[in-house]
Image (tube, rainbow, N blue to C red; front, side, top):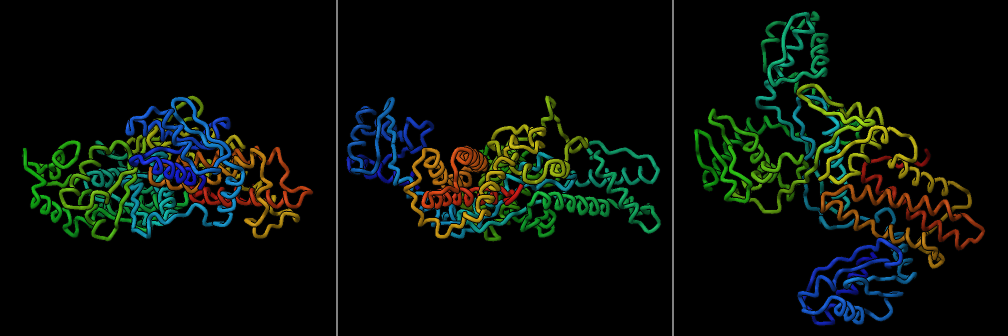
Length: 543
């Protein structure tokens, strides 16, 4: 990578000056007149070594290896701008071509077992647009970490126990009575969505005489089981339509059945991690890095969600996962800190659990913003969204914005079947290149052996530098839980390619130049293809 080349040169220069180690950034330049890359090393190191930043920058530049760069400039308060030689940039393309379809892969994970848990929506209703953001974020993170050499397991945890499931059963009971011509009302805090009326109709139709027997209607256990199983199947179907398949579906009920909640509570007691107050059992979270002490067992003896969640993560550890990432909404901050506190008390490694946190989603249609509520039955289902605009567009839009920012899903833009839609714009770049290679005079063997020194035009060098950044984008997008970095990068690469293709002929009379340009666009196609695959989008050859 070109960035690594510059970092290595800076380390050599810095060490040659005899200064203590310091961390500094190397960033791609944002404007051509500022070169190809820039570093803040002199600014960061100035205080440590007691030298004015511009003077320190001069010393660093003088200590750089002889003819590594076309030019090096000192700018502003002490930034160092690097102008690379064309040959150095062209060599980066050769390296990416040699890597081929494996370009961007790394072995950072070393085969380490990583579980990513995401969605984990209660089986009390269909998946909504909000669940869709978490579903895509989790799935793309799993793809990113697989690319970095981790052995990834996707897991869905569903809460099929507790008061919300009782309310679901009672709500279904009321809907069955309604469907059969009776009168009933949804319990307070229950679920009013049309989906339960549909399940009620199916249960009535499935009955031998077209009526659910009275003893069944009074059997809340049967109602719970039917509601949970049927809604779970809806959830699985909706996820599959989005191209998401889970390796493990984990039921909360199994923790209760195996007595895991009580076992973990006993272990917390043995380690002095809990205390009793007002008839309830509390976690000593604040003494162990949590935001605030929280209830584990209510005064009526029922375990809280926090207690179950701690037991669930102990189960993950016992199953042999070396690292766990939970994708969750930003509203769980206190509980996240308490789960980590509980795991510290129980002696689990500090880096075992991480949270990839995201903000919420609203649908923008024109000037209107849709407000959603699952309990009130007021939401846009993920299934409907995928049907309207297709899985590729849903997936792109769900990761296009930084996870920590609220996402206003622009429905009109997403539904636009034109190049204004960024998902189509990226895919069109891929199909454009595919069309080049379908032409008879585009045969290209051993592209890395082409005379890449012929690629001298600024847009060509810009494309190569963009391609060179791909492995670093993959790494950052994964390790910083930031799939939007890959979405931004891919859109920028597609834009740069479209601009290049509109101005320069790839297939021309100069055979050597044609081979060089074919090698370049072939590398662009590889990276576009890999980016689309990691984002979970299709890679069309024609549109």
